[in-house]
Length: 143
Image (tube, rainbow, N blue to C red; front, side, top):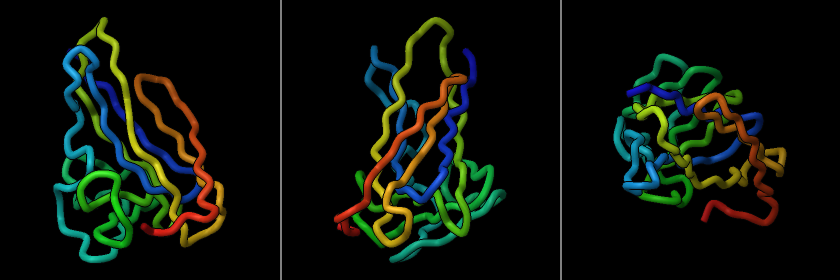
């Protein structure tokens, strides 16, 4: 078994939900992929910085993130992350893998409609592979 790091970094503000799955078993390998477990962020959000342990299974490694309670509709469950709190942030989680198997990383992404710029960008990294994503928040609301 190997441990691989899933790293989610942000260039500009974005809300994310992350999960990884082993295609053969189609089961989530992340811990707390929908961010439901941890200190309740309340009806709006709480801003977290490196060292904060409010989100079970996730580590904030740079910048800051907003841990969203009920500010907007989450893709799954009640909670989500805006990975630009006071500044662009990065969160990570180590996932144990088996050498030789192929893994698929999936997540839902939407842009925070309350702040500029309207084009939100995000980088996701796993197993030394980094991919950039964009979301145009034009016309979108918290719902």
